Image 1 (cartoon, rainbow, N blue to C red):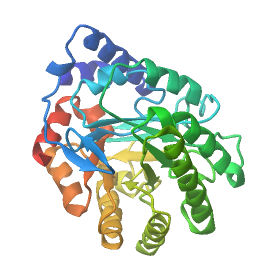
Image 2 (cartoon, rainbow, N blue to C red):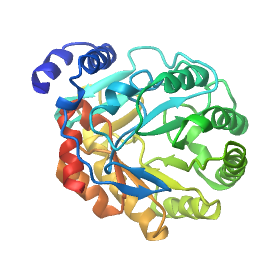
Image 3 (cartoon, helix red, strand yellow):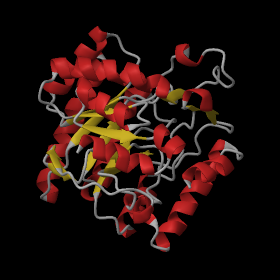
Image 4 (cartoon, helix red, strand yellow):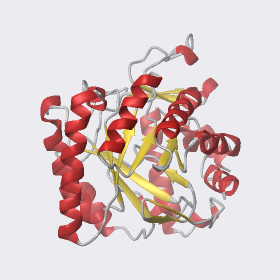
Length: 334
């Protein structure tokens, strides 16, 4: 059934298709069809002090404003991560900014954190009826200088804390100039130290503990991964999400759209993300790792966990395979 829907959606511009697909999911949910679109797997696992119904989550980026939480949550995910959200609304980069590479099960995006702002996201979370685990992914506005990025992250953290089960600090999108520089050295140490301190203050003030995760890029050497791991451990971050999209085009060279600017996701990032996960696990034997990148079947989900991930998240594979992929992967990891 999804194969037919995809064939129709893929005739549309990718960003238009994205909107149509989510609107259709909402309609299906209102008709009570959500639970029939995927096999719901109950295999609870506890990490970061949270109990996830299964090990398969939805990655940030699909539902930037938390407008479709109810419909997406009905598909059997163990958690749904929304965002990336910024303090102020921003339109993102000019269109076209989303490109399919079907031969490699891949997508290139240069969306640029297009979102309606943190207040709109919080309002949508509050009115949602989804009772599963919600992650909220936070970032900085394009207009905010990198040296002042911590102010944007603090603004978002303070506003989402009471409404998230966990918060993800996105330092790894390639579509916001200079953002990835925050993953290294003194920038990372200062940012993490400030955010973790504020998180603890908010935990005490709100009477609930909200874990803090950090999302990193796949385009790092082993030495750079080791330095990131050291900073995560030193600042007692609760989890790491590995990885975001890649700027490499080696795996898609020669394909239509391969030279478009932006982050490449899907099958080509599978091995790079697994390498980063493996290195993180080597340096961080007990820290929860959420593995993302190139999961489009049960075997790929298992390989992520064999590399060292405790949970996995879907994005591009979900677009190509549809809701059935959720149950397939969750069953494989049960």
